[in-house]
Length: 85
Image (cartoon, rainbow, N blue to C red; front, side):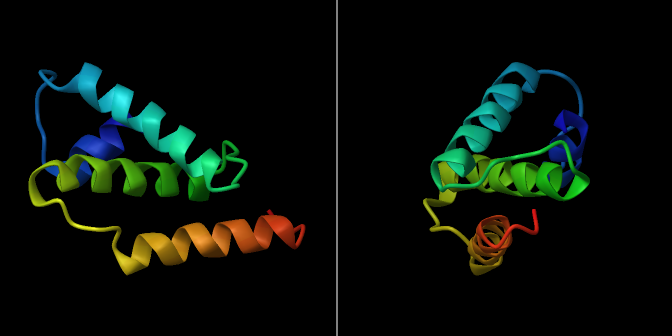
């Protein structure tokens, strides 16, 4: 997931690896707090990377959560609660 996040953010090299790994962990915890039980599925990994990318980008912009990310979280939560996760 670290490599996917770095590609998303356009980061090369390893200077930020420790920080990005910490952000990936924080993203997983925040998603779990939303009520989602993350699995090892590619879909959940993509969700975690998207959330982590938003956390990284909002440091500078202060931008709220993009609708697309909120939509992904809501759909993932609804499908889990409906027993389809």
